[in-house]
Image (cartoon, rainbow, N blue to C red; front, side):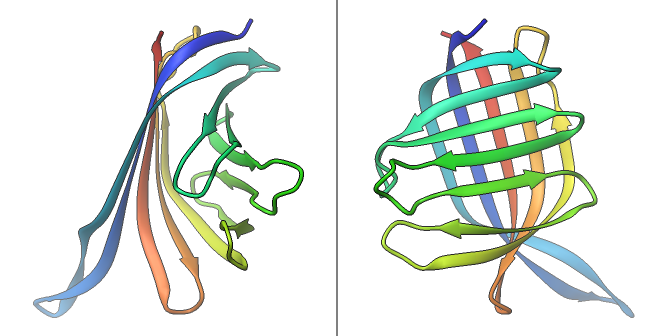
Length: 157
């Protein structure tokens, strides 16, 4: 059964750098950007998966529908745009897995993304409430690489 819910989606993007530490190096993360979306959506379960759906508005993504599918320790993110639009994305985040996908930005060319998932924590309860957190590294072009931490919090409306 579909339920209306409140969503808080937070994405933190970090620059990772290796800093000298004695004879070795240590990895340091510097926060580059934070985005938070508070919106309404729906949650439902089907075939042992939890689906979270919401409609994006603003930032060039008018009328784009985003679907999160949480199942078996992985998170699939799909963005559906209107028929007359090229904006779309389909990406699966699963710990220890490198995923190669394409992402169409508004008024831009298609980007080929390499996504490596470090960690995924699924704390959703049987009702679909709770939080999903995923830590992943995203790379496109040979010069752009960022570490992201995405949190999706599902609350009763």
